[in-house]
Amino acid sequence: MVAIASEIESELLGGEYLATQEELRSIDAALASIDRGEVATDAEVAEAFAKFARG
Image (tube, rainbow, N blue to C red; front, side, top):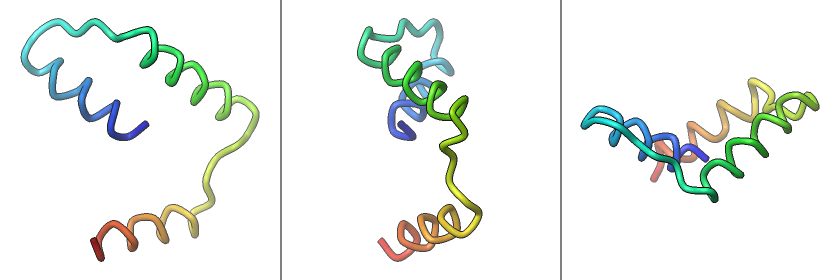
């Protein structure tokens, strides 16, 4: 999801962006997950950032 958001953001900086149906489905699924309360804990977020920082 982060990769899709980053791609959208970079394309928006260059002008209009039209999301694909797949991207729209991914966004809808992510929003529904958040609505259900399915969010990462602070510890899970910190762990993910630490993992990506290590490469």
